Length: 99
Image (cartoon, rainbow, N blue to C red; front, side):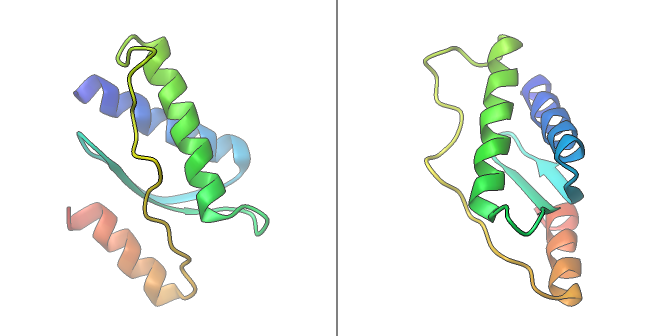
């Protein structure tokens, strides 16, 4: 629901700020989230996704939006490296405008 979406959005923003990651774009949907984030070179996209999913799940449970036994996410997700300015701009545009 919208409350859960707001919790996930806020959690991702705070975690990125805490870690010093640059959040270029975010779009939290009713059943998934898309984001474009720049992390330190020693953080893989899979590690970033795992951290963001774990913290979001924790916050959803604390707020009573998600029961303890309930599963919030799929086992993995889609990650990719962005290696050029044009790819970054295209990814941001997709996340913000084409969902």
